[in-house]
Image (tube, rainbow, N blue to C red; front, top):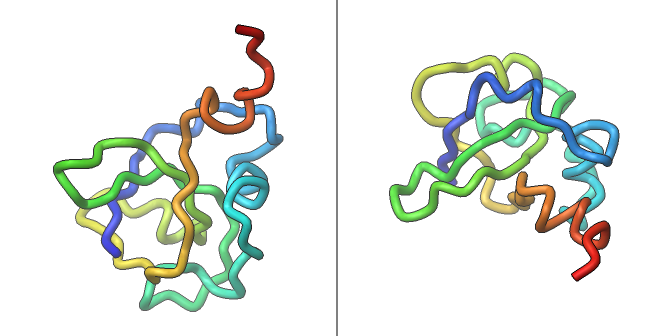
Length: 101
């Protein structure tokens, strides 16, 4: 699957403590041994904001990436298909139960 890294999102916060914790909490997966970018063998260190490289889906997602891949600003990343994309919309995830309707 191809994703585009969204740069300039480090000021966005959630109640999970970090975006990597956010991914761990909502993905249902264990942290992979290696960065999910297919050609990378670094350890995943951050929860990265990404979008699918697909014009029909412009939602923001979180995936674990190494710092090197997270710093890429051009082009798309080819990540393993088995990695779960977790919504970066906190109203759908970590703040979902915080709202009283």
